[in-house]
Length: 284
Image (cartoon, rainbow, N blue to C red; front, side):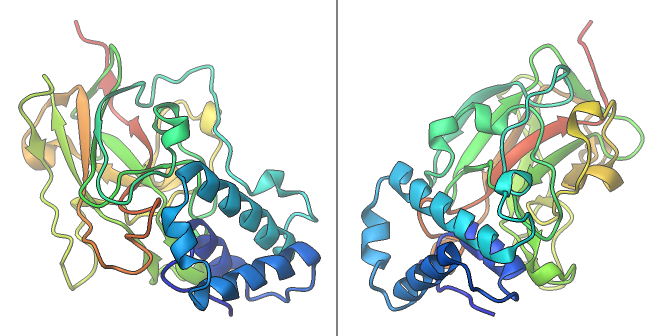
């Protein structure tokens, strides 16, 4: 299996880890392999670090198509695999506004589609491949989203879900690529209550952190209510922190600089896809 080094864009690591156990014999794929090797040798790493985010994303997009062409999973048609934003007629289950965003170090991916990239439903897909339609917060970055007139209410079990682009490396549920974030909620946008999150826990991932439960494949626009087992993502129960309702959700990256594959620009830090309400209501 061919894997690229720490300077290789995360998008391609995601796809390479899932797809490159198969032979590479198509022209686009061969070009991708050559670029991958050049990155491993450090020939392109300096260039990538200085590229504008848009140019980097263009390169990533080309390499993504190359990898998918090599995989042969869609017969050369990548429309079923490459992420695209989904617009639903009923967006009420999901965040509809960005209140604030403070980018951390080495952020940048998704900036051209911001704020729409984090609003509305997540990009559904298999847990073995991470989504690409995300906003990278950067190391230490944070974002606050709201739901318009709707708010989250405490009900039985999980009350809302946060989707990052975590995935199973090589399809192994026990080997998860995760970038963790701390989640907090507020009614007024000023006073916050956080879910305890220990990113350095050694006996598995802290259930209070977001960013380690992969997405699932589901029919986004026909999902009348969100069922955690069907949609994936990280579920949060307001009762766990003694809160009855909330209008805003804050996500703060808990990564550290110097971690290979997790701090490389422009993909560093927590990669937010979406936030959805399980139990909610309109304010009186």
